[in-house]
Length: 461
Picture (cartoon, rainbow, N blue to C red):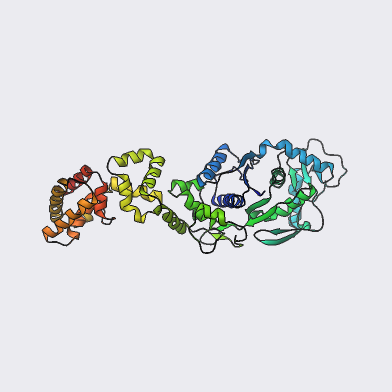
């Protein structure tokens, strides 16, 4: 059975690159009826926090990336790493290194001065010296000294790296906590990972890990390294490109299905399909169609895609999501309007739920009326129009766009003016704006007494 995993470090929020890695692993496991495992690599004791762990879990749940096993925590498995380290030591595949920090720094400086690549010089690899007193050692792996490490990457194709480029990596630090490369190999073996799908910043770690697999007589998983995500300017994705927490996109009114769709298209494709469901992603996903080139983050395309998803939601569902997210705001909106009807009136231009909220709030609490707008449309003629409209609208037995629209047209005809002479004072009085969606629909979405009060107030200016 195929088994994939996502193994974040809880040192901050779940960022976009991590979310895409999780998505690719989830989709691959779901496509082939496998298992998706969540593992928390919390060995960075200074930076790992419970808050970050929860932020990662919350983001994955929001995206709908459900895991089958876990979460597992590396700091709860220290005894296991020690056991495996001792096994390598007993087979003469590892050794204790007593080099002090000062010696390592001096070694590094001397190598740089000679124009050499800084690396540990293996001085304790086959040493028979008596260990110095008072120095806590690290456990190092005896990396092969010759030959090449090769694998057929599921994304990048054949890769080969010489063992001469690799040093003897630390397995266990002085405090017994495993290094990344050691912990991940032990975990992936114990958890029977069949596929390791991760960012291509890990390509250089892979030969080190393959050598560890072989030293432990373990089966190798298949590796697939996904190219990084770049900003629209071609630079590494950062906060200035919008690389904020995944949950910030929730706060900004994006829909989880739209985020999943967009993240999937960052470096993977299925023909020319741009908009597809989660079910279609699972049906189509493979690693053969993951691009070898970096993907470009395009916030405008994300907004467009989110708008496509938003337009597919019924007005009632959009209103429900607003109510669930901000019940207090929703109760205020209900005091001045029918939110569902107002959503229907303005939905053509919505791209995010935040757009919806901002539009509804602007209709509920019109912005400050600019003097120029009032002078243009609420002068003596405009106020006279509003007076006539208010009287006719007040007499309507039904408060709806179907009833309001004819009143507006009858007033245009009765006054012998062009439509803007009626529509603009009406629009400005109700919304304090010169441009809105269909004003009869907006008026109908407002509660009748609220709309009439605004007309009366404008007519009495």
